Length: 183
Ligand SMILES: [Zn+2]
Image (cartoon, rainbow, N blue to C red; front, side):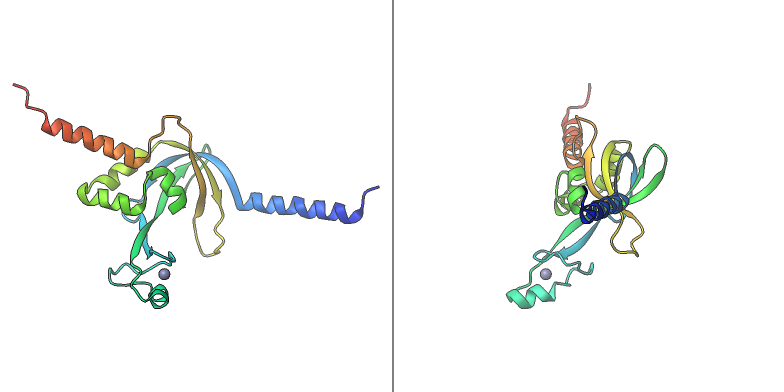
């Protein structure tokens, strides 16, 4: 005979699973575009609290605790427009998932961008039309408007990260600019 308590907890378990399914879903999608005007933000290099964009602003909490300016770093925050089989919508992709796409840290990408000002636009072109499996979750903060990319997995077995492709393109450009002109 079934214990009514265990039936109840099974129901509760089912409900919990249903709720978590409602909070997140895994979809196959194609990147339609990336917002190239704003794709990263500044944080404290120790505690990763968000800092204002002004270069001088530092994390007072860590400065007070350690006695030195902790410095800052950048983390990715990509706004991607993606398409599934049935809809097109915007998602926000934070650092951990964005590194899968970019293959480097936001600071490394910004260093590359300093030398190659078109790199952000090219990064968008590299990602466009590529297929990914994404787990999307509803934001915990009710004010946030976009679904978050919790995990991302490239669908193409020959997928190369944005930075790898950029470096490759850059090498090809350099090589062709060094090549002697045809006679
Ligand atoms: Zn800090």
